[in-house]
Length: 593
Image (cartoon, rainbow, N blue to C red; front, side, top):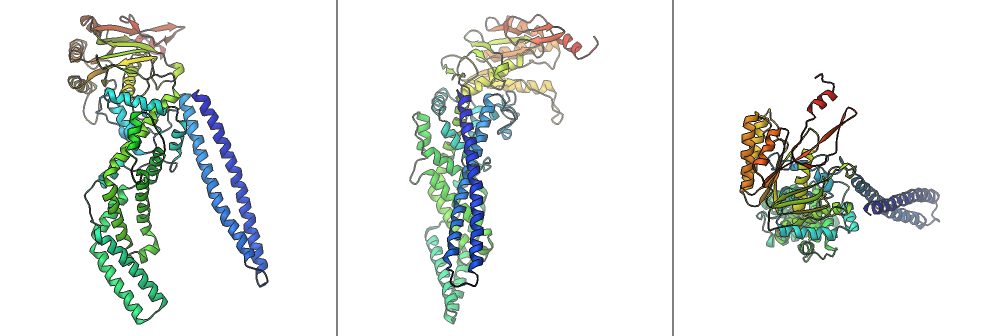
């Protein structure tokens, strides 16, 4: 079971932390003792020629060796501590204590998106926060793209196979989680791609070889002058200074442009390189994973090339060192680096997009695999290409704790295209809509779903659940809602079938206009091939389902008054609700009626 396996690994990683901590203390004490011993020997040797200097050299060598060993112990302890946090977060997800931890994906918020805001895809306690274990920004971007747009049926099936293969690979997910620094990557992959694929600034060619020769000649002239302060040596040094200054000035503007653009684009390369290296050494069977790994295999491998660029970036950063500020210009340090960076772009720049896309998709699939492993009861949905349908048994919401998630079955398709859901406040109507929407989003992303079974056709989701007014934009709730409804109609008229989810349809207008407008909107969606659900408090709108039968049907949620308190069972039932709890709710908060 996932919980017991995570608990076992967590206990083992905690023991590893404790073991490394003990080694850390022992090595620290040993270093102190060796330091004191070396100081004592040095003190005893002071003024005594008979005592060999090897007596001091030996403890110094031991001290240096312990420094190296100590650094490895500290690194091992850091990795173990991060592994502890990784499995603690995993257990928190299994125990439904995950909200508030992990990346929220706030940068993907888009109020104009047809369902992201309505279905809580991003933000605190969101679907993205539950799913994402990506370390790189490219991985987060790819996971967001999975959730924001449905994939084709064959792509969904390929992702399902990949996720199923990755699901038991706990060691791979742990390794990816522990790579690099203990921070999220902040580099922008699109900026790196644009830089890598940009037009050349310098054509190195022979100029690069000339720069290397001039640098060596400058170094030789400097050493010759230091060894022999003769007029010939000074003349050689001055001549090389003049030649190198002229050469550097010739390429100065281009070199500064290369260095500036590279420094701005090439960030977080160390993490990307280690992620690529880990994936290159893994073997896969599913076609999609084999295809992604093949994108990284080259001579030299993608990880080596990115590591090379990272070393160049570190050398560029070292230009701020005071010594290099002094000797760098005459040695053409910056110019040579600019040539090296341009040479790297020429050889590898065209592959960066492919490498980043492959790494990002690996991480997105790994995130879905982590969810699949932690929720073994959630099945992969069946994609049915021949008819528009959504057929779920035991449908629940993955963001709700399993212990308090009441499941319902929901079937749309064939003759039945519309369900009008009536019921009292807080009875579960909106949760049903969100459960259907989130399940469709996860299904079309290639993930398992919170249901006992789900069959659906390729669907685009469109929702109007959180339409609100805007003081800044000067729009009312009604205007915001009809604007969203227009987008749903446009989606229904486009390619692919639409699953529409509309909460409190046209709640912001009078009952006469609402009844006419609501039926027109729903009929228009259904006639364009869409299927979906509409909730309402207005029982007059339930007549829409009757008027559209058999393509429309009514279902409802009930509440019960027990000991002066309103209770809900959140079970969907056929037909129209027969009572309202509005008056009871008002009395429960102390309103005199």
